[in-house]
Length: 458
Image (tube, rainbow, N blue to C red; front, side):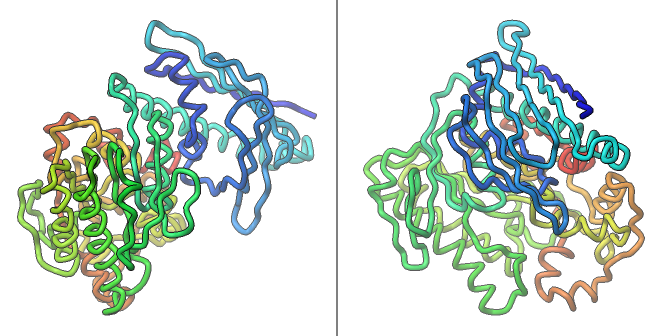
């Protein structure tokens, strides 16, 4: 059996103890899985101590495989390791090492010794592909580890917080919960089913939420809402989109306002749909609301936070742009046609798309939690909005694919109805003025940098 070794090292902006603690906390695994990999956590026992296990299901197209790894060689602040008990490799042993590098820095070294199944035959058939996949994975893991630790360390003098999140199982909420947990905060979740540990049940449709369970929170982050792109906008679907946002926000805000010990902060999701179709007009947080279905929903959505604000809670209304991640949302839907060379601009391509990488959205929420002077509407978008034509060209460049097949305006409207006008053809050139004034440091200020990171093309 031929064994190969792969080593990846990076400087981290924190001590060995702080970096080790980050890896030990709940959520670290979720933060480290590249978004282009189809991996699901099936079972976990403990954390990273000797004997603790992780059971994963990995998918490649229609095929799936179970991967069971067991931790060993646990040395707090110094190293821990895991080895494959069952999985796609003939052998896999992974050591995570932490070495001091000055007073407030360390070097993280990931060292993997692995062997492919079927010996020389698999090496001949796919050895280079496997090596490249490992390189992409660890490059991504180290970028995320560096950036997450830097974000948390910036506010290392602040006490840990008790934070309640709605929509924690969603695309953004699941990553946000992992990001905050690894930073040392206690995360509770609002759920509609029977609650488990660190969960609180509510039923927004029935107006049910136990106020007593919300006492003594430091912050609430409200992300829950019907997926606006899940199905065509019939009258019933438009009502579900509106109710899932406005009614739930009103219930939560009113409940917080009645508490004896309310949270200091409520961060409420909104959207750049607030501004409507505004052509090439530059839109900061002072720009008035636009017209149309989404603009109307966003106005009512934000107004539903008034009871909490009037009760003295600091309310941040995040007007979120197009969230980029290959795990879901717009980018996931675009990848198949673009990878097959069938991608192209939508309509004229002149409409502005104001976007944000998912990692920056997490960073923005964290920055809003920690920045007491930040309140009211905050545009959660990257500093460089692009036209749809520019987005198309950049995605094609990152994927090394042509972008020659446009989607005409009439075809988009036939396929999606009103949704096409509001989501694909509407133009919103939104800028993050308040975040700039609050000194938020963007991880991915440009589209090419964001896509290269998210798709593992750096």
